[in-house]
Amino acid sequence: MEDVLEVYKRPYDPKRPVVCLDETSKQLIGEVATPVLASPGQVAHYDYEYVRNGVANIFMICEPLAGQREVEVTDRRTKKDYALCLRKIADEMYPNAEVIVLVQDNLNTHSPASLYEAFEPAEARRLMNRFEVHYTPKHGSWLDMAEIELGILGRQCLSRRIDNVNDLRRETKTWNTNRNAASTKVNWQFTTADARIRLRRLYPSME
Image 1 (tube, rainbow, N blue to C red):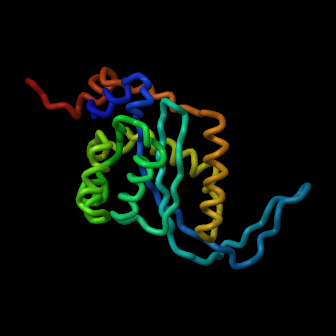
Image 2: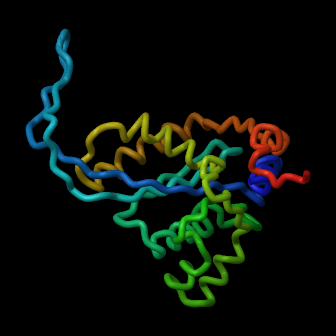
Image 3: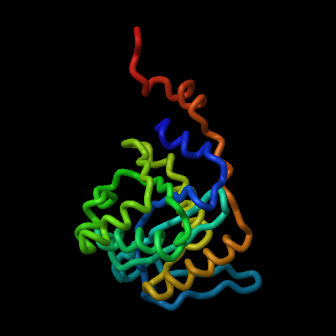
């Protein structure tokens, strides 16, 4: 925990950007009956029945100090999808960075092994060398600021029925563009000193 909190204390450095990565799923839900849209004096009506069209995966890549984020929608959440996401971060989003300081949780796909399953060894090693990885502790995924962004995405964009991946990509891209244009940053307040007071039960006793 303290490792991640110390990372968040670092000043902004475009050569060593602090990037948070998290992911979630979105169930694709279609309508059985045509909804009745809202009109003056009339609320919208949606049938409680729906049709399931599968599940899509959403990667949230955010740089809190720059107020920028990137949403990547994939059909699945596999080791290869994670590896491709890391390559996008390294080669497309931050090609000029000396090193990318990556904060992520301990999901089983979040390991160097995923890179070696997706790429040739030389490419996997090249990508590994681009990152300085910091993991949130078990049951501590709330320390990943990308989780905050996913929560906002859920409330502002995903809290309704979307029935296909193409629409999901279009809607999340619009949300992404608007939020980046506002350069909205995460105002992180929780520090190592706070952790030692509020979460002291998690520290070993010296008595």
